[in-house]
Amino acid sequence: MAANGKNSDDSDASREEICRNSSSEFREEEEDLIARLHRLIGDKWSLIAGRIPGRTAAEIETYWKSKHANSARSKSSNSSKTT
Image 1: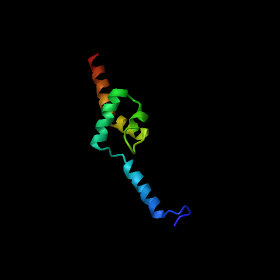
Image 2: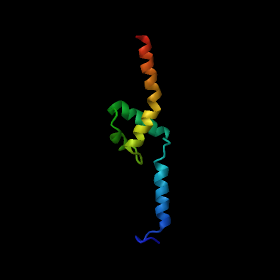
Image 3: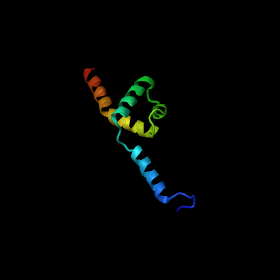
Image 4: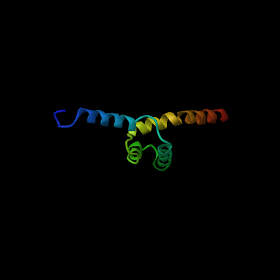
């Protein structure tokens, strides 16, 4: 038993739960919510993260930028081809 009176197995389980919840895998519901909120409020990642339990602003920003980086590059390359 740890000095705080809790079993060390409990804290290990809590750490595992936190890691599992903050994994880089986003559920479809989270992806939809991120997209809707981004359309409404833009790049305000901390506000978006406040609506998704267990997610940080950094996780959401990283997800968004990695998911939408290719589409942004495609748009800019298409617009440069037309000019």
